[in-house]
Amino acid sequence: MSKLANKVAVVTGSGRGIGREIALKLASEGARVVVNDLDAQPAEETVSTIEAMGGEAIACIGSVTAEGFAERFIDTAVGTFGALDIIVNNAGYTWDNVVQKMTDEQWDAILDVHLKAPFRILRAAQPVIRDLSKQDAASGDIRARKVVNVSSIAGVSGNAGQANYASAKAGVIGLTRAMAKEWGRYNVTVNAVAFGLISTRLTDASADGPSEIDIAGQKIAVGVNPELLKAAERAIPLGRAGTASDAAGAVFLLCSPESDYVSGQTLICGGGWEG
Image 1 (cartoon, helix red, strand yellow):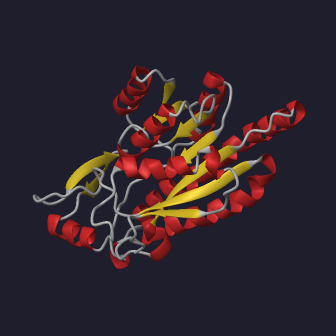
Image 2 (cartoon, rainbow, N blue to C red):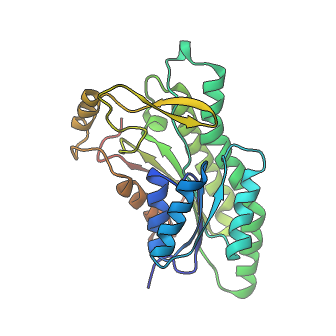
């Protein structure tokens, strides 16, 4: 039997990259998934892929930082599938600079997407989680529910040029530990995965210099110099960057029944490299 049969999962930033692989992995194990992306096309493509696999999914389009998004996201899960079992706070991007050149806009944008957005989603989910826990207790059918927050090795060890990102990802670990203590009474485990170097459109080698992505009208440089990327991979004991599938596997570990007594922890997914 699929390990996540009859579970309902919400995954932010799941139209592309790591988030997409997380959504596909959870769906492959039987979860019904609410897929989110800033843009409709990638979100709908993930939904279509899940449906082609024989799974169930629905898209919830929009920025995780927008007012009212958290409530709409949670309502989509409950209104469509009637439950909420797994929350994966994955959405995010980087906007790097050394501290003396970093603007308030850069600082606020990265803290908002990586830390405030997960906080808002968990806040919006609390009444649903509380009520479902009460229903479980009344019926005698106790269900383990899961929260997985995506952090980074930068949040554990720091990284030059990423004061905003490292601070946000360190905050995610603090949020995770606090919520593990708050929600244990609801039989919810709350854990974090701290990714190392994972190959995505944000980190892929670019011999022609950084390319750009558009985040809510802001042009953000992405891509890594190939020589720097090779040097980074040499520092990883496994000798390579992780794939989006590798990253999704680490998240799945903390969504699976085998982790029902693991909470408040940060799992480093870095191929043996910890910064």
